Each structure stands twice: as C-alpha cells, then as structure tokens.
Image: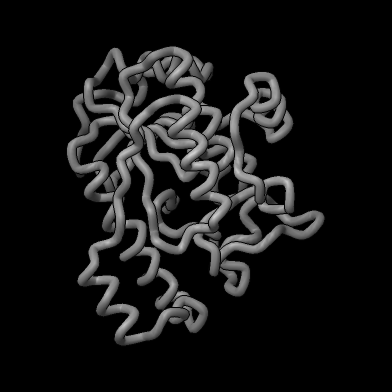
Length: 231
C-alpha cells in the first residue's frame, strides 16, 4: 500500500479556514475541485477571501445544466479568478456514443459507470496528477455513504490526501453562510435540486429524500459516480 509523506493525523481541528491554511502550509500542490454547487461556491469564496494559494479546477462533462454554466460564468467574473477546465478524452467519448448511443447510461449500472468513467474519472486523474492535497465540498449529511467518510482522509485511488472543509456543516449553516456573504449559487437549488450533476442524470428531490436522491434516480446505488467512493 502506498504511503503519503504528509500524515492525515497532522491536520488538527475542524474549522474550514484552519484546515485550508494547514493544507497550504504543508504543500504547494493543493487543488480544489468545484462543480459549482452550494458547498463548492462557499469554499471558492473562502479561498478568495483568505487569498489562499490553492488552484481551482472543474470537470466539464459536456452534459451540464445551462444553469450550471451560468453560475460558472458568474463566479469567474465575480471573483476574477481562473478555473482550469478538464473535459473528457474526445476519442473515448466518440467511441462510447458511437457504440452505445447518447443515452446508454439509462440501460444498466455498468453503462452508467462507463459514462461516468469517461466524463469524470479520467479527467479527474489528469487534474490530480501533480497534486498532494485535494480539497472538496463534501458534507457528511448529504448521504449515508458520505457519513462513512472522515473530514481528512487518504484517497488510495488517486494517491492524494483529501480534505472536506465543510464536512460537519449542516445545510442550514451553509445556507446562512451563503446569504451572509452574497455568494452566487445555481438557480436550480431553489427548484428542488440540492445536488446537481449532469442534466440527464439529475432530477429534483422529493420530500423526505436525502440530498443525493436525485442523482441517478433510476437505479439502486450509493448515488456516487466514483469520484468520492467509500469501500
């Protein structure tokens, strides 16, 4: 098993700003992935407000909602920042759609995972290739699967330390923070979409459902694409 020179136990406390600062003190190779959800928008604000040297990237799958692209553009202009975009390998994507059509992911879990692998996982590997620490917007109350995670953890698949600064925040705390700091958010959040991914694979959640229930709603799964998977 691979080991990392930075120990996850060397991180102390749970405060988001403190964890972000500790990350930059321990490594110059810290990256943050944003999909422009509420959590990611809050972290983007923190990075800019604290002037932390953490680069930001996003995975543009080519199937995102128009509203996601709108908040993406608003974020670039509001904070005057650069967000590096990673898109799917064109040859792999061409072969998938040619062989199985544009909606193969509805037909089986295997097909859906194949689509996620091409549109998300392979671009993610490129994005994390030189990183030591990966910052994400995960919160533990988003789903039962995420409750099994820890705020600072070792990601074996990508060989990086993973930090979730907002891991212990409730949705109410997050919403209050967004209002207080006038943070731009996706318009779909007000229409029943707490978790927003690719347009064909995301629906609004129903009363009583967890935040990730609207993702890949047609299948019985952990509601993860593989980016943030527990054992």
